[in-house]
Amino acid sequence: MIKRRLADWLPPILVFCAALGLWEFVVWRNAIPPYVLPSPSLIGRTLVADWGTLSGSMMVTLGTTFEALIAAVAGGVALALLFAQWRWVERSFFPFAVILQVTPIVAIAPLLLVYLEPGTAVLVCAFVVAFFPILSNTALGLAATDHNLVDLFELYHASRFQQLMLLRLPAALPYFLGGLRIAGGLALIGAIVAEIAAGSAGQGAGLAYRIVEAGFRLNIPRMFAALALISVTGILIFVFFSALSWLLLSRWHDSARERGG
Amino acid sequence: MAPGAPIVRFERVGKTFANGVKALDGLDLDARAGEFLSLLGPSGCGKSTALRMIAGLSQPSSGALTWSGAARPELGFVFQEPTLTPWSNVWRNVWLPLRLRGVSRAAAEKPVAEALALVGLTGFEKAYPRELSGGMKMRVSIARALVAKPAVLLMDEPFAALDEITRLKLNNDILRLKAELGATIVFVTHSVYESVFMSSRIAVFSARPGRVVETIEVAEPAARDEEFRLSQAYAETCRRASAALLGAIGGEESS
Image (tube, rainbow over all chains, first blue to last red; front, side):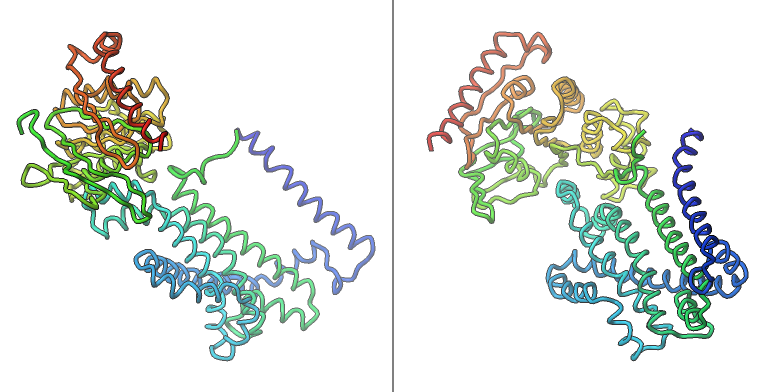
């Protein structure tokens, strides 16, 4: 079992290390200056040296992402519930949700920055992109309830509230979690885009601002270090929601079933 | 209620769906206390609609459906699919009808355990539907229908999706349960053999729009076992039911 785990993990790790090694070698062999392309080792050293600033910024970006996600979950689920109860609400409000979804966030961010404080604008941008997947997936899940089970609840004179709590919400959970996983990644993108558009400095500066700032100063290694941290943040968010999904669904839903073997 | 007394009666019941499909037309039928009534007919003849009407899940467009008692008796319903909630284990699935009525977990311990024992699933309380075979899922579904001690058990082609062996086994279980519980069973099927083997009475439906073309009483055998399956009476009843069914389908083919 452990042997097989190792065999599964070893190739991607080796390939990743080889790619870094090649990068390092190319930089060293051609004596590329660090302000053009820093080597991985230099990026690593920068990451350690600038950890104080960068880790603070990472927490800011993570915080924004999660605050936006919480708002998106609250709003998306609430609206999906209203959709499920009244068709006219769905017909009236769905177009707005679609417009928000299809308009690129890069185009909305400057406008939001006009009306809102930078910190709030960043939060709203992340919220706008995270909201739609939650809303549409939850609405789909609520509508996809097994109609025989609905009949069964009716046979036993279940109240609307019972039907919601014991049937519709659990049935929608896998859809909701799928939406949440997408929304997690999108919220980070929304936050980064808004941070870059805002270019705000000072205490509330996130990782994207560090990139902009380092770019102004031609501190290329630091740009790469911040970029690496953004990737790590994205991976952390993805892993977190995948784990959450597995935790909640593994006992009963096919999507979480172990594959192969 | 005295055995044989009508408990629910269809009088000239018609049903036309919103899309214009006429499922039932002039349906006259009663279900009698303690009997095993099969609704036998070709697919799409409205027999499931009739069953759903008994359950109160569908309303007649014309005619009337009346219960002879003051109130509708306790009902159990078994669907063609197990129709379990996949997110809860066997115990919670069986608890559901009681839970919807506000019966607490502690108060449900005894009836749930009894229902699971009736279908032979004691020990599987913690299992999730995904971990069970098709036949076992169906047993959970039956236990759930039985947990509230229904006076009338409605079954809508409950074993149609199962393999032959599992199906025969479950049919025997249903007969045993009926003997133990004394409930009235209304059973929808499109299998002549199943209906004759199981029922005390068979209502043969015409093709859509459905109505009852013939009611066949099955002479009560000493026991519904393999011996009965080989008996002259069984073969004779099968022939009669087949002839009635063929007549019903023939009407559809000529139209």
